[in-house]
Structures are given as structure tokens and as C-alpha cells.
Amino acid sequence: MKVFDLHSDLFTDIAWRTSLGEKNVFDRIHYPKLKEGGIQSIICVFWVEPKYRCQPYDRFQNLLKNVMGDLIHSKHAAISHPSLAQNEENTEKINIYLGLEGLTFMEGWEGETTEKKIEGAFNVLHNNKIMHSIFAWNEHNFLATGTGADHSTQPRGLTTCGRMAVQKANEKNWILDVSHLDETSFWDIYNSSENPIIASHSNAKAVCDHERNLTDRQIKAIAKKGGIIGLNSYGAFVDLENPTVEKFIDHAIYVAELVGTEHLAFGFDFVDYLESYDLGSTFNTVTKGLEDASKIPHLLERMSKRGFTNKELEAISFHNAQHFIKKMKNLAKTI
Image (cartoon, rainbow, N blue to C red):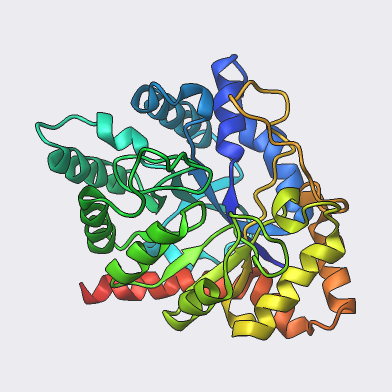
């Protein structure tokens, strides 16, 4: 069964390995496991690690250079874009959509004013086929506030610059992703965006009471606007005490019953390839039985036994995400 993963940090691994002189990292390290898991399409993000929070612009440029340098020589990766969605059925390569997890680096972009920096950054990044963004990652920045940020001295929610960034994202027809945003920023983006939004890697707060998960009201709002929710396999967001495949499926059942399977997808957020790096934070809470991409077929078997039909599984695994990408393509034609 084909799989579309709405969120992956594998670019972090590629950047670290290439900085150490390794070659063909995607093809050697990641392609075999993605293929084993059935992943045909994936949103991979450029994410400035906590270790580099004091120099986000320089780190972002380094990530971009190292990752794109590896992908350009790949035999198994195809950089995709909503305008190229008609090629989605190509099974010869993994279709990679380029995204951004945190936009703090934009504040360091060239430009006389913050507004000029934002405009210039969006133009350059769009020309490099980037088409997705999460405004903040576990931080307060000049655009928005993420979960896990210190709110004691900083205002929450979307800033004036953040509202401008929403407008630019809409103009470029980028996918606006609300995973990692606190509730105030979530609703500010939801109410500011003319386009549907996604939560690429978030679960149901009613099933696991973690600040990174979505309330029922948020889930319903995403669905009402035609968006999708990608379920996250990271253990801390699956269950606070004992994350397992079955508890991951509990989230799938809950969201499906709340808004329908047509708004459900996967954004696995696997971390198996991040463990050996000094990222400034640790990510080691995995879900038992869903530790990496190779375990996806087993997950689908378990979901089938829990009551999901084959048609529903095909939609959740691939078609819902693909249809959302095509919807963004069609929106672009109307601009």
C-alpha cells in the first residue's frame, strides 16, 4: 500500500552526514527504509536544531546547501511541488516535497526592513521549490509562538510580521502547517489564512493530554476548512506512559469518528536517525512497534484488524494527502 508521510526530519541526518564528508546519503541510508515502509511521497523539512538557535540564518543556509547537494545526485529522490502533482503516480522514485519547520531564520535574511526580509525570503525559497511552512518550533519568534515556548515575558499569538507571512504564504500557495503552534497562534493563522491548513504531525489531545496535540475544536476547525491531520508516531504524543501501536491507532479511531477518515493522514515524525547527534535536545521516546518507517506495513495490518476498511486505509495512507496537494495546485490556478 502506498504511503504519503506528511512530516520527516531526515534532512537533518543528511546535513550532518554530508558535513562529515559522506556521499549519497539519501540513497544509501534513507531510501531502503522508506521503500520498505511503502512511502512514495513525503514532506521533508529544513529544521534549525536547538543547538543553532543563536545562529538560525547561517544554519539554515548550511542545511539547504548540504541537503540539496545530496538530493541533486540522488537516483531515488524526485523533488516535487504542487505544480508537478500529476507525476505523483511515478513509483520509480520517492517524491519529496520541501518544507520548513520554524521560520526564525527569516529574521536574518537580507533586507532593509523585516517586511523586506520576509518578502525576499519567500521569493527565494519559493524559487527553490519550497512550498510548506511551520512558523515556529517550540519557541517564540518574530512571527508566532510554538508549544513549549516560555510565555512569561513574551506575548503569545501571531505578530504583525506573522500576519504578513500568512499573506505571503497564501500568495505563493504554500501549505500552512499548524503543528507545533500554541493555541493562540493556531487560531490566528486559522482565521488569517484564506487557504485550508494542515497539522502535519499532531495527535488528539483527548487521547493523550500533551500540549503538542490538538483539541477537538482544533481538529474540527481543520476539517471544516478542508484540511488534514497527520498522526504523529513520536511516543510522547501517543501516550504519556506507554506508547504502543495500539495506542497510536486509538488516535486514528478518535479523529476518524470525530471528523471522518477523509481528514486523516500520517505524519510519522520518525526520529530513529537523530539519536547519534548533538542537536541541543534529545528525541528518544519512540512508540513500541512503530519505531521507524519499516514498521508501517505492520501498523496498517493492525489498523485493518481494528476496523478500518481497505478503502479507508488507502485514503489515510496516501490519497488524502495527495488530494490535499492537488487541491493546493488547483488553488494556484485561480490566483
